[in-house]
Length: 80
Image 1 (cartoon, one colour):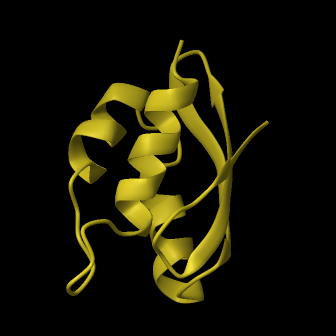
Image 2 (cartoon, rainbow, N blue to C red):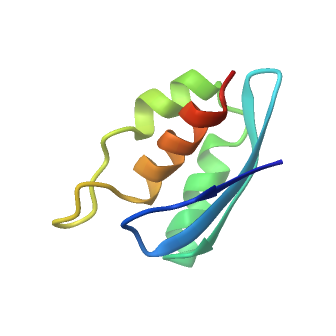
């Protein structure tokens, strides 16, 4: 299980696992509960690189990042 401390967003932390190149067990601490549960369900089982491609660069309001963008950063960091 990987743990990523977010920066510049409402959620504080993202927890996830990568098994056989697929994203699993995604959970957010803090943030918009329903939206983040939805994102977690949508990418469950998705190829890591596809998830990064879809989420990276997403902004939230006037912020230069978002919870989905932070998840992409976390996946990039831990995708080895």
